[in-house]
Length: 102
Image (cartoon, rainbow, N blue to C red):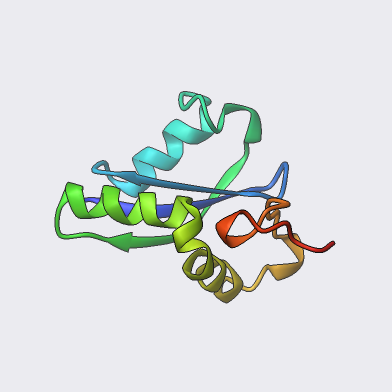
């Protein structure tokens, strides 16, 4: 069964969004062993959230949506619900490329 998942980096306090058809424990193990190029320098990682999808295609679409500006509000809602708001590492640009005020 495909999954969309969110990993939390204990090193840089940031988030990684991905999808997989592997078991979540196995995929997390790959990330923490440094076998995934995009998260290798951000270890250790913790599984913070996941959603099960009916098909791999739907999981990829959901991942794309959460990673792009169009899904910014939904991404923010999910991460805020995780309860670690003070640790969120958001980009300087918010939805639609509007520069956020810091």
